[in-house]
Every structure is written in structure tokens, then in C-alpha cells.
Amino acid sequence: MKQRTPWQGMLTVFRFNWPLYVAAALVLLGTIAGSILIDPLWLKLACVAAAIGAAYFIFVSLGVSHLVYDRSDLYGWRWCERALAGANSQDIVVCHSGFDEVSEALSNRLQPASCTVLDHYDPALLTEPSIHKARKLYPPTPATLAASFDRWPLQDASADAIFGLLAIHEFRSLEQRGRWFAEARRCLKPGGRIVLAEHLRDPANFIAFGPGFLHFHSAANWRHCWELAGLRTVDEFSVTPWVRFFVIALP
Image (cartoon, one colour):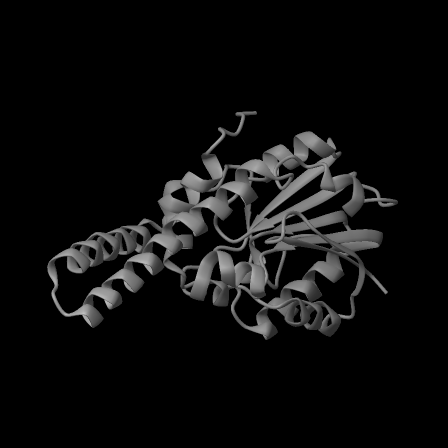
């Protein structure tokens, strides 16, 4: 397995969202120049404020991305012990929405009897530009199974653990996410676990990503999704202030 590089996560975020960062850099340079060259004081102050905002977005969002994806336990996998405490991990399912950077490492960590990777990518349904860039840059592995988010090519009660790590938020409606959980429930064995990891629409992510935090969903919204499917929360915990894990099970 190829080892992650020290800055891989942050650089991946930049690579998928580079137009936003280039635009912010142009705003930063333009407003710095404006604050020097423009005479009216109120315009100078406006340029300074815009420059501070652009610099904040660039450095804070990338800095937090580095802390989350490169410096935390997110890809260290020690959280698996807590998330799967008391549960089997012989047959696992890893779900993603077009970009898979976890299934190989997770499989190596857990050493399951089987690891099924489901690719829910649907260009007509997933409209975020970053996920389309990710898909072009990192196509799925040959063993990956294409699967609609609400219709999986798996038997009933066939999975000990189902993982949706930083992927299921791409389904924008509550109803779609509820259907994903309903299908996860169908495939989950008694005593199994669904492990969800997501950024949340909360103050910490607003401070880090500004308006971009609206791409995420609140904790209450997520709970409503799996409760619609008749599932219950077993545990929840944070890995950094910006990523929350939810461990979900059958009633």
C-alpha cells in the first residue's frame, strides 16, 4: 500500500477546488494593490477588508484541511477500535461517491474476510464540480462495483460493517440520504455497524470554510436521515473539531 505523504490531504483539497483558491488569490493581490494605489480612505479600508477575507479563506481553509487530513487520526485508523467495539468486521462494505482513498487502507487495517467497494458516482445526480474533478483524476479500481446509492448489488444481511467516510453528504436531499441508510439497513447483519464520518454544518466548520460549510449537513439532519430508515445511534465522537463520527446500528 502506498503511504500517504505529509501534505497529501491538503494538496488534494487544493487540487479539487483550485478555481476557488486561484480566484481568492487574485482578489488578495488586487485588493492589496488597491489599498496602496486608491486614494479615498473608505476604498482603502474596503480593499484591506477584502484582502483580509481572501487571505483568511486561503490560509485557514487549507490549514484546517492539513490538520484534518494530514495530522489527525482520520487516516491513522485508531478510531476503528472505538467505532467497531463489540462488532464483527469479517465482511465490510466501503461506500464512496466517486473518489475512493480509504478502502485499501481500511481493508489493510481491519483484515476482513471480504471488502466490497461500492461506487455511488452518478454525474446526473452529483452536481458539485469538485467531485467530477476527483472522478477524472482518480478513476475507480477494477474491483469496485458501480451501485446506485439506494440499490446495492448485495444480499440482505450480508455486511458486518458499512463505511461512509466523507462521501454521503454528496447526496444533497434528506430523502436521498434516508434511502442510502435504508439500503444500508437492508444489507447490515444483526449486530453490525454503519460508520459515518462527515464534516458538519456547525460553527467550527463555518470558521474553517466560511460559506463552504453550507455544503455539509447538521448533526440533527443526519440523525433524522437514519432514523427515517429505522436505525439508531450507538456512539458518536469527533476526530478534530471539524469531523464527526457516527456509529449506527439496527434497533
